[in-house]
Amino acid sequence: MWIFTETGFVSAVRKSDAPSKVTARARDKQSLQVLSELAETEIIHTPYADYGYRVIVTDAVFKGWLETTVDMLDYDNFKNRIWKTRGNVFHDALGNVWTEMLAVADSDEREGEEYEEQ
Image (cartoon, rainbow, N blue to C red; front, side, top):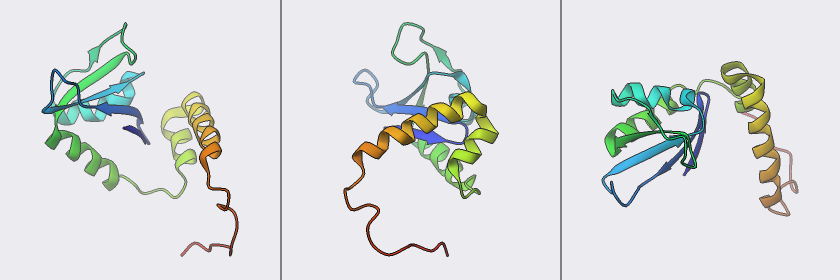
């Protein structure tokens, strides 16, 4: 699964050689920093793999990281938060993902009554 948080981008998978663990991978170390600290483990550098960094953790640690991430959610605009926490380069890359995901929007996504925030 792909997970975008205010601290970065993580790809999480379950590898066949470690089926009881979650392998969290990232293209930059900062994206794995919080998870690494929660797991009390080092970030592994894998320069020849698809993702250059990874952390291998138990399900409990990974779930705890996700819970911590939800607990930290105190903003109403993710793209603006990313700009503050990760800067322009990360913000612009995230904006590209957001734009590309428009291709999968339902054809009637923008039809209907106006939604008002509550």
